[in-house]
Image 1 (tube, rainbow, N blue to C red):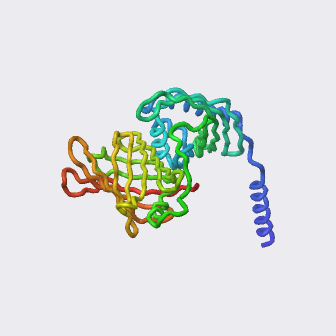
Image 2 (cartoon, helix red, strand yellow):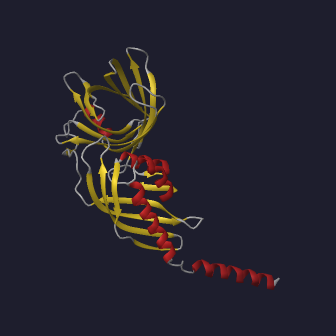
Image 3 (tube, rainbow, N blue to C red):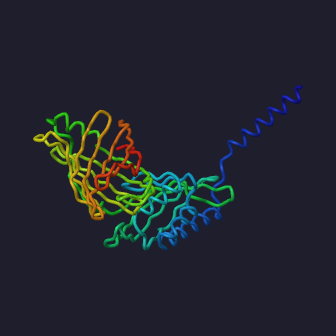
Length: 322
């Protein structure tokens, strides 16, 4: 009996001693595998959109997370593919010298990059340079893949810059209701079927809403990917004290430039747009519901030539940390 007990003590002690041993540093072979994957990334991302699915599968784990600048986090390979597609076409990409460190089956990579990107929807190519950090994991087959990827540019932010402020101190209750929309949002949806608004498929958008200086007009920018391709939008919300109605104006990258109406009720917001698409009058209704401080759900319905409303897409909006 004592012999058995002593054997158990020895086995446990040996197991604990093994667990406490420091993990081995990365081998030259491990580092070479990670460098090879980076060379492949540089080649494949510059080869065009058709190579993106293969690149994502080659480079990232199934549960990888992409943390791009000025955009929502992409969780998993499908979201990463959509995020890369929404950024535009990369025509040239080069990683700088890699600094690789790690222990056991985990590695950290730090490097610089240079890229040339054709913006979604056309326009002059953009030259960018910056730095990134990645976390890599050794896979069961001995290969290495990235599980986390975050980067930022060395260049100043380009594009539309709108001076923002806070809600006016003397704002009435109606403007205070609009204040719920202020902040950064990640919007994901699914178009059930093709409609006057575009084809069926998934959408992923980033929205940022701020009060203009003066605090009486709410300005929102929307960027991302719809089933039909890259999408950009600007919206202005306000409250008309003369007519006692919420109203606004919307302009987007599809060429739509129209006013909209907004009715804020108990637990819902309903936007109404009167459009003309393909020579036909189309009324679009966007309803936000399940409102909370963390997010909401939405449904989008259209009525063509005075016909009944048909729900064409649904999704969720998630408020992001500031």
